[in-house]
Amino acid sequence: MILKPINQTNLYGLDNIFNELNNLFSNNKLPNKILFSGKKGIGKSTLSYHLINCILSKDEEFSYDTTNHTINRENKSFKLIQNGSNPNFNLIDVSSDKKMIEINQIRNLINKINKSSFNDKPRFILIDNIEYLNINSANALLKSLEEPNQNIFFILINNQKKILPTIKSRCLNFNISLTYNDAISIIDNILGENVLDIVNNELLNYYFSPGNIYNLIQFSKIENIDLKNISLKNFLKTIIRNNLYKNDTDSKFLIYEIVELLLHKISLHNYGHYNYFLKRLKYMSEFNLDEESFFIEFESKILNA
Image (cartoon, rainbow, N blue to C red; front, top):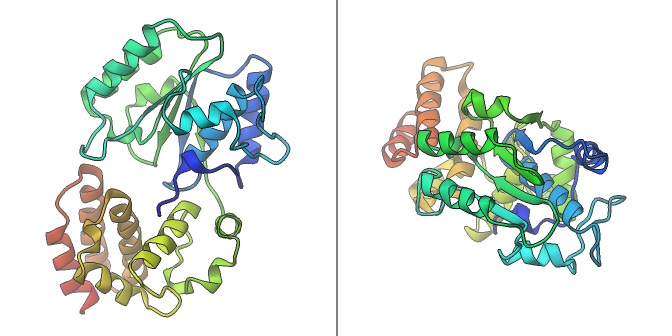
């Protein structure tokens, strides 16, 4: 079970950014174009959903708890966002059967924006994974960002990938990061137990995000992999030999992170292989290229070496 930001009613570790943005909104100073950048799984989308719920639920029953940074599951706006019917919220993301965010998604969004609002509440447009905008959809979005949109707020999510500089320059930018100890503390809170009792240290990367750690644990439970007693190499051998990297997009990118962790570990001893496979991994990730030939070669030259 992958950690879904839309379902997270508790906000951990990013309360300072949340408070800053909420204060800006309360003082009518919140820019209507915000860009959150940072490692995938660090909490950018969760932060966005919490800010949106806080603002939309202000005059509703079971409103947002700004002291404990929690969403009440009984709140009307939360329930409507959950079932995809909140008139003040639109989500744009990569479709599960596509490789990019397509121009039709942006055109449909623009048509919605141009229609009259159902109420006088702010409207929010959350665009996740904006690095997957193709050139046409990126330019269409840019035109919309350049227009004055009163009471409409765009929140863009970027996972440390290259995006159009003109999109970035239109937004209030937040580069979000966590220390290793912060990430471990957050995942302990989410799990309700000590992650170090579940995962051996070799599989924990200092650059892993809480979302990545959680998804690693859930993925391994489904596949019956004992994370406490398996080495990094044997973990990857199990993944490759059982074709588990083909399961779904979330699992695939999680496995890419594990591969990168091993490559960093071997970099001091074999920089040539490190550089070669890291470049291939980068292109494979950015352009959604076929991964089978990569993993065959990776197992032969790295795991079986």
